[in-house]
Length: 445
Image 1: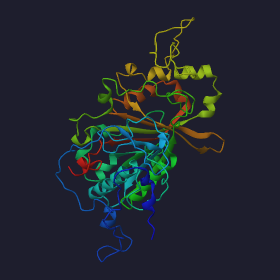
Image 2: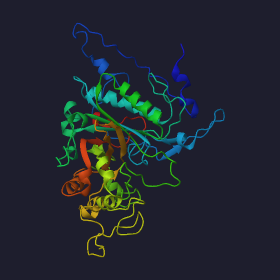
Image 3: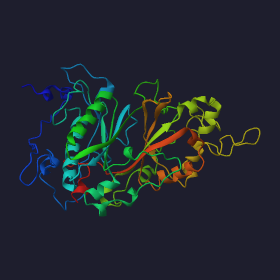
Image 4: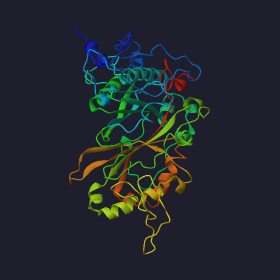
């Protein structure tokens, strides 16, 4: 019988190819000790990593690869476009999907461990997921039952990122390893949160420059969860495609505003301190990791679009045309918060969003924002269900996201045009070294 994995997109890239796992899968039939229909231990463990944990294992070993690589062309196939050949590495110091530029297609999905699943099952799942992510990010087929959705595509910049929610630690008996930075976020006055679309035991972020490649990865990961974990919620989003503009430019959100001008940059002296947990941080398993705050922020676009452009610019504090501050200059010019107009009023209003979010207005608090836009149809009155899948990365949300959001809560002009509808906070450990899986230091430590 023809195996579809044999003619998948792996023929587009050189190097070794990964075959299917040699481990079997138990169909989970009932036994004398376990009635039919009950979830068997072996089905929870799944295919890979089912041999159990090596408790007391050490920390993360060396073996990271650095940077991004472009796959060379092979002589027997037509060359891919630059977009298709773009490849992100899986075994890196910080998990992929944090430092890469904004990707054109994204999926955010949260899982809850199934009843009866615990630490052992979670370890097997993360081992399987890491194997899948490594293979797909290299442009190879999924190791088990590949669907061939992305057969004709290259890696297309695919990234997969894994995180743990607050509830994960109780479910796995690892309460003592739960970071204090993962304490639940405080309530904010702008919150209208749907609990069914918030939080979760496990969180996965998928990003790619190509839509089918992103969906292919999402589907492979969801299938690989098997009966060990169940989908809690899913959200999909998009950004501008690479090469869509004449020159690289800061992205615009669905309000039409340039969004992300003041993001911290890796070249900043304090970038790592703001974004990543240090190598000697607490807890030890979070070394080189980060904390992701995820918010579904609906934009009330009908109300926003009725505002004259001048009023929109006053709400943000920047010109809509080019993102420059209202105090003058271009997009990267530092905003002059004291500049006055001819009548003596502040050029940048006190409640302007860009003024309030500045680090020097929040005790130095800053975060790396890497969002996706979303559009999920229309309400009965025709209003678009659209907005921002806000994702921020910080070494500690109590020093990054929380102080800024509290300040916004007290008087941001933009608050009248947005609604926070879902929220999550996840601990995202550092990248997996070669031969390891994401979260191994936690689950086997």
